Image 1 (cartoon, rainbow, N blue to C red):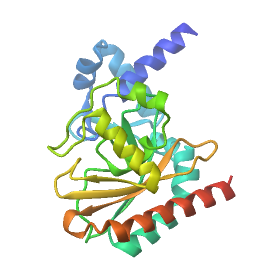
Image 2: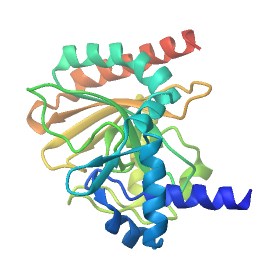
Image 3: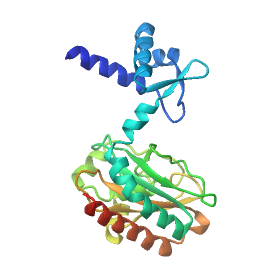
Image 4: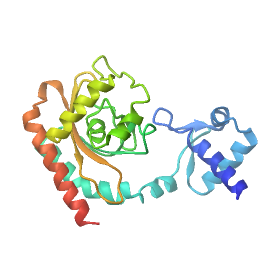
Length: 253
């Protein structure tokens, strides 16, 4: 049992070498980052390729394999949440022409310092954003992140604020008391906003989805250019999308 646990830990260290910035890495890079012997790395890579969890790429590099992607698509975040949310996200995009994001809170505080993006709808007229499917962004600088934070209780937030908040732009809110006040306003009106806090020129409006058994906390939101950020028009659309999504998720349970 201990040997199996050790093998799993080594495998996870190897898989942890892949990132958005470096989706393809060499065996030498994996060995350097994990500290594992080169022979162990080559043996693990051969096993992972054999099971389709990794695949070989040009330049003696390795990439995430189709079997790992296939397994990920079996997650409730894909099968239950994203598939149910897609029609609501599409309608929100059709009504606004803006980026639509679906995100969840992943893990306990203070480790849960990011919003995990599980869905995205965009178009040629939408402003470019940093988000991607499967990507993470800070909770305190994103609309969906603040919407998720607004659902947390005082004890959770107390643990969350134990870790200093990093500044992404000069507009990022990093003072816990200021952010607490913003979260109180978000709870009162049913949606959260950010203004150039993650990316200059971008404004986001997001609403939390009411709790659904078997799923982590969920938020849906828009990211728009500062010049098109009509909060009075966009906020009701986002809040309604969150309500409709919650109803469908409960009905599909």
